[in-house]
Length: 162
Image 1: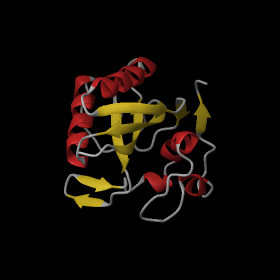
Image 2: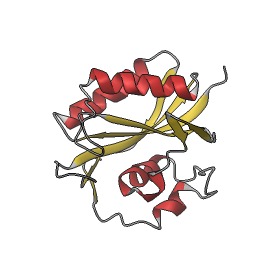
Image 3: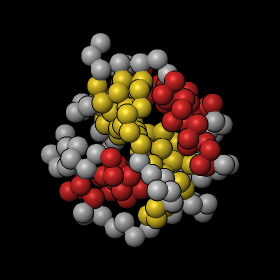
Image 4: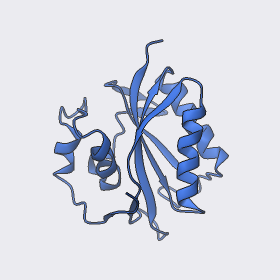
């Protein structure tokens, strides 16, 4: 299988979030068929949904030799390893790993939508993604990440680490 570049969003707002996010990156990189190529800084962001602590968010570019569904399965396994429990939509979590892009693939299956359907409105995704891939073109809108970022309010996104 030919290697492709993918973009993943990471988030955490329960437990030792900096340690959890760094460990999740290490788990990804240790997975056969996945190589972490670049990571953004971590950003503190206000939560969406029910009252809960602020999040730490970031993004990573990974090179994979897995299918989109195999990569999604691995992301879910890593979430589970860090105690992810799905109680309520947009609720607090120890770890959230979202597959944003799988190269320029457009996928619509019951358990996977690519590109990620809500990322275009989310500053906590676009800010870190624009840091590491501003010229990545969203195959649905035809616009680069840097262009999408210019249309949203980023005032609630604070750089946490350099």
